[in-house]
Image (spheres, rainbow, N blue to C red):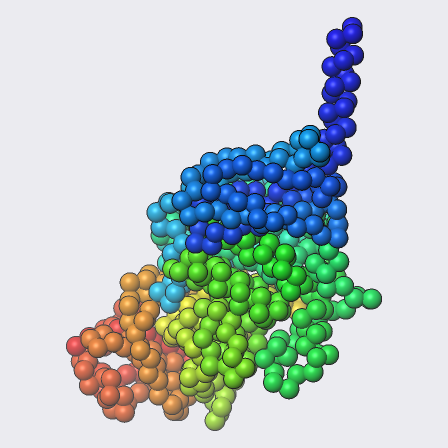
Length: 616
Ligand code: CA
């Protein structure tokens, strides 16, 4: 009995001491030896953790500084990991006087040495963009979980539908066979708010896959299986904001961790204020410090501890998972100096990598400002290798829907390319007919399959890296102004019990198969066609509603013809294309297989495209 009491007292005492600090998190949870950057800063979180003194002993690892902040529940530990440190585990001991009140076993792993990781992506790729909640439900057991607030409700267009990473894994063959070479997933990390959590852009834990999508291990499985099928993986990351439910927003380390306003202040969403030489501080501050939405607190990346936290978080995901690239949400919204520092840090660690910034801008000059090595008068260099080409998107959305004019119709496409001198690297622009924030492409084309084909023929053969949004290949529709749920519908057949399965040709309609076959034929032809990946581009002024563009190298060429006339079939005389065509005698239209034995005139139907592989 005495002995029992003693044990009980011991237990109570121990638990009392433990609960006094109650270590909850160390982030990054682990790191790697042999990184180019030898610095590592750990965020330590636990009740009154700052009252303790952390200690560690491991050969090669130095604890340089312990940083306390306003909130006693945080400590930041500055470490150096020497070059030849051996992988292994060590204890970080948190001490109060002579007592160790808590320990964290920290692991320094060997670097990720799997094959085919960190490949980058470029114009030889075509990217399939999908929203994990809306593509396929591979595991109905995780549709709702105990530890997340919003439960599954497939009837609600803004609710969670149950799609997950297993669903993506299950359809990698479909994506690969269709002809895509890369996959960009909208964010899949935990978004634990009460409602409207499915889209993924309000992250509540930057180190954790949302349990309704799977687990971190499941994501690694997806990356590995994609790589086996020669599909690259692009992860979506956000540096402007996180979700209001984020654990560190609930208990801020410092008041300037985020931008706080006396009353709710929304960003003016005017990204041009960042590059505008005449912008007022008022406008620029509102752009940079205003919140994206009420449930998205705006990060202050000028806080150096937060900046390091975000940079290390990205590098952790790259190293941990083996991904090939990153898509950066709202690139102009964080402080531009931070974005430049972040890009440089990632690219320095992974030189083969590629990163595309979402620069949702109307104008070419302003877009160009945000690309790495842009010739900016203010000296700004974003270090961001790739950018989204919104000006091309806007042109594409109009070009096939209007009558020809001096600057309308085909001239829109012509003028976009004619301004490529503005860009540091036009072939490293992401080009797209739509995405998860825009009207569905088929909808924009007025559900006219001829227009649909013309736009895709252009986007899949011009300069840049094409990105196709899931379901475009099966004519999914939906208008943005009717709600985002309308442009993010479930892929038919992605859920058990769906009445049709558009993953199989038997279940697709005749028109869906026509679209699918068109996309798939071009993609599979494009895959091994260097002239499209890296060939030069030459185009001719649109004439009589017909626009002609060539991609060419010294010994190969492809001719793309767009006839934008609504009703007139045309006979195109080709003599004025002699500077390219004089080397070629025949050709083959790649979507129909039509052989062209004589290139002096080419018949082209009204409202149609031809992609002609030229032969000597
Ligand atoms: Ca599920």
